[in-house]
Image (cartoon, rainbow over all chains, first blue to last red; front, top):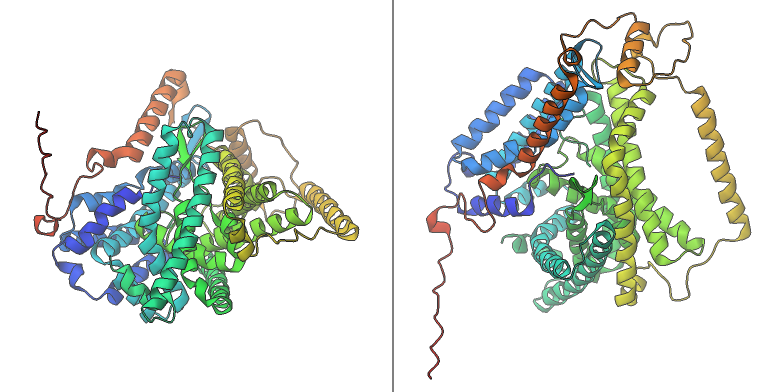
Length: 237
Length: 360
């Protein structure tokens, strides 16, 4: 479902990762930032206290302000998933509890449910604030270095770097194909949309397959044993 | 689609993350084996990962077009690359989605890997293989794999959330089965059409690849030149017997499953009569009474104050909030607009070159 940032939104954030001034968290080591973020998230979900979540939201927001992140990016991370959180809060409010607060047609909102929903909403917001703080202030290669330092298997880190490098390319190809299909009436209804999406997915896979072959050949031509040796460098866009 | 950050707490996070990371370790070892067997295919893993990640960003209209959702992508990946590799790719995709798109979460990475990667991919792969063994066409087998993989993903989502709400979350009101029913009802309107969409996308995608480049599917071991080996009569009998056994087990479980009753009353010895409720309100009122905590009068009862008008206003407010919540960022950032980047970091503008005038 929606309720998350789009790829277009992320383009904006990515520009700021490299172009923004080096203040606050931006100067810190990537490993420290990743560890602190994971720690904040773990504390948030393991203790599950509303006051703790609220404190973490405040700290995350303060970190973003301290790092002089652009207010639009802060808002993107804090508010974009807002409606999904709203659905969560509302769903819990009329689904759980025994003490009714008010009634709206067939739905009755309960005190315990509202409290549970608000707690969950705070937890989500706290984790997203810290994820936003990490992503806005840390270029992706720094995160990859942190993952290597944390002994994440090399094959996963190399795959992550490839994914990050090529998903933007696939997005461009997909956009072109989709615009073309739309101009030809290929997205008229559900059936044609599903059919066109399937055909585009197949075509994109074939292009990915061919591109993978070309990458391998190019890397071997440059003397690399395999393409993953150059993966961290290719990730630095 | 994914279990959101912060929904699972305490032991639920620990258990699902431990299981999820075990699955990721299996995925990583499958990826290593894939690379060891075919070293030249190493970049394919990254490209396939980008492909899976990308497919999960493809929006399909759902719920009558009022919203859109996206396919899992893991059944398709499992058909092409195998279930083990798919688990690793799904974990990478989920990590990127959690970090960059606020979708899913870091703390729920284990749970989402289990649902989307292990079960979605694994069940989809098995369905595809079974379909091929039964002699079904490539598109039909792949389509069914997409459908079954998608549905099984949500089934495990329901199990995880139901267990969490019934046994870990505070104020449990229903038993596990009660929560499972409520969650299934909540998932159905959006995820039902989505599962059908995933069926079409997976089926058409495999068919398109086969029509354009059958040798790619052959090289990945999805299809064989001599065609699939069909199941023998004995295997078909075993399958039918298993299906009948499953149906019988389900019927027995339905008979013996406790009706939705409050967890507070679960310890009481006296059996409770099965009561049929017509609405959610009746259900909760009835359960509250049985638990010994009868519901109190409503603080704000809109029924006494022009119920229909009030409800319409509330629904209109919800709809406006929904639209604003989904598209609010368009107020601030437009496509192509440069935001948050200092002038020094911007790329220099290209000089516009005027075409030479045509001489008459």
